[in-house]
Length: 251
Image (cartoon, rainbow, N blue to C red; front, side):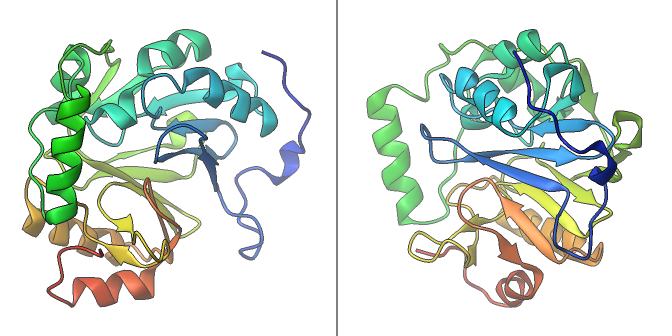
């Protein structure tokens, strides 16, 4: 895969908020985003729904990123719309694959596990997905190279930040906290269906109270901008307001 030349001198710097360290990659197929973390090298966060692998390679090329510049593929949690192309991209990018140990088996076996709806929208989605056969354990799983147990630094992989466990959506959910004040949070929160930049609790969660505690930890790290996989970019102010409310979803 060819790549476009980019200015290496700007990598890893948050220049007064004009250029952050998170590059969202919105996919045409699927309802979630994947992310590039910019540093001395790049980290790919999540791999999208099955069938989006080639599109992700195209997005990387458009962003000026060569395969050898990807130092790590990090999966935020064990649902198929986040690890769906992990096997394909691991082979194409030749980068190690990381996931929390609590969600690793789901990815290996090729299924999402049990989904616990938190609102009517979650119930409708689950029924429709089951009818479509997307919850079956017949997807191609992937073998992780690194099973995360606790928080760890990303400096070894060329990015100034850290990965922290943020259980709630799943027991093995992970978030990335960057030195720039940005955070990539997977499905810890999601943007609203009508207002994409309005934070809400996910429509599925194994433990919603654990999710609240995880959001507290993310905000305590001094983050100002949060990137969920579904919906728009969220502000820390709005997320704090949600945390102080009793609402469990934004429908």
